[in-house]
Amino acid sequence: MARYTGPVCRLCRRESMKLYLKGDRCFSDKCAYERRSYAPGQHGQRRSKLSDYGIQLREKQKIKRIYGLQEKQFKAYFKEADRQKGVTGTNFLILLERRLDNTVYRLGFANSRSQARQLVRHGHFLVNGRKVNIPSYLLRPGDVIAVREKSRQVGMINEALEALPRRGVMPWLDLDKDKYQGVFRTLPTREEIPLPVQEHLVVEFYSK
Image (cartoon, rainbow, N blue to C red; front, side):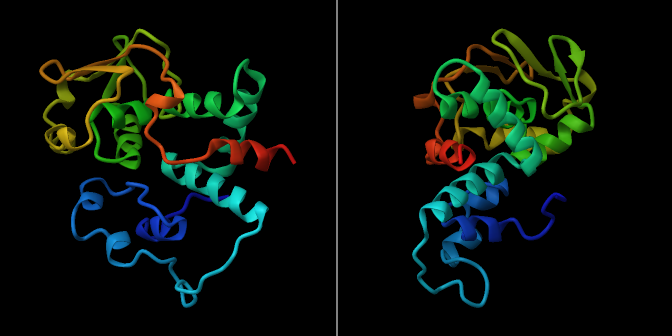
């Protein structure tokens, strides 16, 4: 399945919640979801009752769109989480949070995960002193993520850092704005991951 390239604001409206896919625009009065909080399309304002399967599907789609993944990759993370000890749903979210592109976004070096993915692919970041341009690279506790010296003048990185106070830094990360670097200090707990999602529904969806 190809990556979605249409208007991302339609995705927020389809999932009936802000997915924060467009950075600063999502915090402004230009946000499409704030203007039209119903589903897109000709019949978007109709009320429809979802089946149990439909509820599970929408929750899966919601998480997949938040992290910007394709179905094959998303399902691979679920299988890996299912193999690990502990609660599968929590393991699943922790795996997604460990991605390099997500951490770059969480540290405030990008305004959205899609922007973070682009910056990583273009080689603007170092992990433990080595250039990594793979957005899906999984970080471990203690890893240091830094902006390359020659990339510290990139406009979108500095603009994102200026807007960071609006989002804040997650408790499992440490950020040094002056040095343009952060530390993936520890694995997050479910309570620390600020996502209004019900990951157990994804477990139920894939367990059928």
